[in-house]
Length: 278
Ligand code: C2E
Ligand code: CA
Ligand code: CA
Ligand code: CA
Image (cartoon, rainbow, N blue to C red; front, side, top):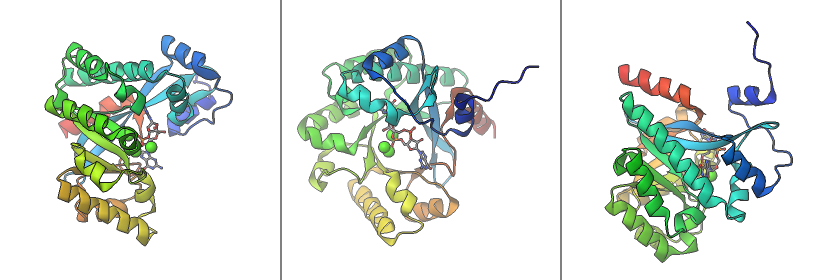
């Protein structure tokens, strides 16, 4: 049997490590990538810190580039955002994520599927219509879906954002404020946003084990969330110690390399199915 050659691409994939992007030229390349089916979703579990059960799976986009191997989103999402490609990318991601969720439902697993939505895509007038149409097409219920918006989108147009989130909440979607703690939103803005979850940015969580300041920030986010009655997901949990501190401090959910790295869909399916049987 011929062994697969070790290319930068499948090596990176095995380790879930980024290949440094070289000349990723422009919008046309990204547009073509969508046409050619070069985008893929990897999935990272979100766990209940008390029971260690998987409650959700976050969709993380990668570009399986023909020459450059697995390209990570930080290299092409900003490109989409400055080039008017956000909506096309967003529609692709929603469709791919929902079809995966529908496949999982067929084999009896129903994690909450979390999807990153860029502010440009979210602010588009037709966003909710596209979302609802795709959701219905794939036979999913809204409470199985979590839309992750970055905290920085809150600062763009707070009134508009609040209205959009309210519309989603009325339909029972989960809405999480991502990268929480890194933005410039005021507590007043946060209080006014009807989110269901806050995701503490990994920059704080990664530093918790060494930095008293980072731990203090995490504690204050947990206190704020409890006062606002929203759940907290800590991202970037890389070791057991941090997982323990978070759980003791009242953080409901965690995500990070300690539990699992983002993984291709087939491995995510195996993981979900083995957890259900266990
Ligand atoms: P994010 O939404 O904050 O996603 C979390 C990032 O942290 C992911 O990077 C994930 O692989 C990484 N991560 C998870 N656990 C750990 C850990 O324990 N330690 C460390 N050091 N890192 C961890 P990734 O996949 O490279 O994604 C980067 C960003 O790209 C995402 O940040 C998100 O903002 C954006 N992104 C990814 N997929 C999409 C998408 O489909 N649409 C949009 N609009 N943005 C996306
Ligand atoms: Ca996210
Ligand atoms: Ca984040
Ligand atoms: Ca981020």
